[in-house]
Image (cartoon, rainbow, N blue to C red; front, side, top):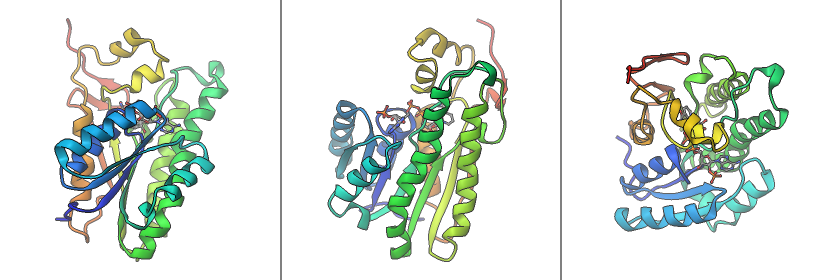
Amino acid sequence: MTDLKGRWALVTGATSGFGLATAHAIASQGCHVAITGRREDRLETAAREIRDPHRVEALPLRFDVRELSQVRAALEGASGLLSKLDILVNNAGLALALEPIQAGNPADWDQMIDTNVKGLLYVTRTVLPGMVERGRGHVVNVGSVAGHQTYAGGAVYSATKYAVRAISDALRYDVLGTGVRVSNVEPGLAETEFSEVRFKGDRSRAKSVYEGLTPLRAEDVADAVVWCLTRPPHVNIQSVLILPTDQASAHAVHRRAK
Ligand SMILES: NC(=O)c1ccc[n+]([C@@H]2O[C@H](COP(=O)([O-])OP(=O)(O)OC[C@H]3O[C@@H](n4cnc5c(N)ncnc54)[C@H](OP(=O)(O)O)[C@@H]3O)[C@@H](O)[C@H]2O)c1
């Protein structure tokens, strides 16, 4: 087992959903966490709620992963953080809209690509050199079942998650021999703020995504991340594809009648 006690983790997108649950799950193992997102109030609250029960340090860092200058300033400005990070969970991400390409909004495409792909690269580029230098570390990227299969209206979101899978796979070559591990955790349908963001605040449309089925909870995904992190140092879990029992693929779900 890899003991997380006393280590430091950076979890991006920790103001809600998987990131918040993962920060709690990692902290419950005695690991200190730096948590990130754009919503400052949420970050402050989350840091407080992590520190108290788990008795670890929780450092809130507000930045937009799409802005390289913000990523660098926040991470390099957090005294000593880059020299002690053992874990990076690249989780910040989103889907926007469910439109065919011919009706799609290029601004939505830009935001998905800039966040899910370029943001993940910016954070990784900033954190990884320290891990390589120290000869240990673990990068967990949050992909999706949409990184294996496409679906109608999901072309650009899927493209970003295929890219996350490609980056995870290629990164394993880049760090081979350095002791750094790279895992891709790839969830299916999970009820977080994801659909509310996708449908731009339309709560009833968001709710309908999960109607009649039992989706994953954020804690189920956090569990998978912690499982990857706590394997012995010689074991690198490359990928965990985790779907609800009511889902067979990106486009096949079972819904119970009301
Ligand atoms: N829920 C699902 O069904 C599902 C399935 C497979 C994969 N995923 C993936 O899982 C990851 C987490 O999603 P979730 O379901 O937990 O959704 P969520 O509850 O909406 O959380 C998304 C997180 O990403 C952060 N974020 C978004 N854009 C950002 C930006 N530009 N800069 C910094 N932080 C940003 C948000 O923080 P702020 O808004 O505070 O910035 C928030 O903390 C995403 O990569 C998503 O694609 C989700």
